Length: 505
Image (cartoon, rainbow, N blue to C red):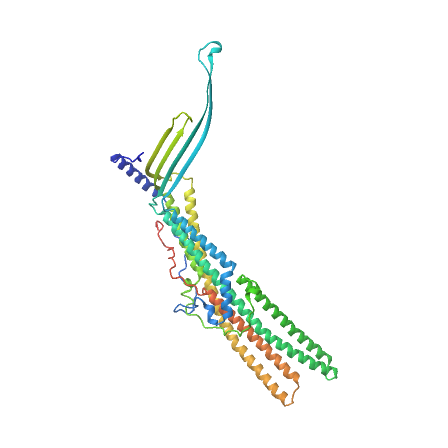
């Protein structure tokens, strides 16, 4: 059967004009797009920070320390971290949502195939109007019958997306996917920072542990000398008590450092998603010299180097497209539809009779949102609220990032000033120990004075190691605050807060 097509003529053109006029009238009822309630920040709110070329830190910033152990642990963590697996799963789910939204732009065909086998047993009972007595009732019982029926059909639909509503849905899904991609980068930079920070804390504990063990050994020698002098009546017994207290304190420090180092090793394994055995044996190495130079792009390039800020920018873009989609829900949906079907029935099996029916139709379908009970308005206002929330979160991310960078720079500056004084204290203690060693070699003092000077030098060395560890941690924190090597050069534009109230975007 040939598909039905409306005949050309004035009546068809007149109907089309009426449909267009009604569509335009209904689209005029769509609400205007208002600007976001929050003002998106286009610069980091910092003053007095250096500005200049971008490029710091580099993407694989941890390799600058030249530590193969650190490189291996970071690579292991990037492969086996549960956090990275979750971030990757969220990104892949967002990509599938983009594919789903794009698929809605394509035509679709749905088929129907149905068959049935039926049984009927008809009995007719009634009365003859006006017939006297028992003759007015009658009963017909023609018997039972079996029948078969089958139908096959196909329905093709294609949303023409005249107003671009579905394209806005695709753009919103792309924005969500790009946000998920940036969030995955944020998880990666956070993991790399935590691994490096924990690893260098373990190295710092090992360096401090070596100093603490040396100091404990010196304290044990000092206590032995005091015990001999007390035994021979040369010193008061309280001197031995003081020596025992110092030795116990230093041995307690050794135990604390050993425990802290063990916790760091366990935390490294947890970050890498591996067992401590899989992590392997770590070798103590000298701590690298902290880089206290201020990065040249701490202010201007921050907006493009923080993955959380990039994710917030893409969330704004997705929310803006959701507003467009919600606004265009007021517009009529125009679709092309085609139907084809074939029906065959055998009303009475064995009789040789059958019925065939062929159907075909093609045409346009227009759905007009005449009355929605406030649903469209609620959806639109909800989309506007989501945009306001996305802008507020973006502003909060920018302010937080600025605060973290400012804090990192201030911390490095303060620790650098402290390092100058600590180096002077170490130099003074070393000079004091050298003088004590010279006097000891000349027999002017006994070993107690020299051991005491040695323990004083160990104390200053430990203070310098603690300060170096703090500076290294602050440097790593600043690298993390600046995005850890992430850089995005295709961020979407921010919505203009001063846009006109009647803007249709």
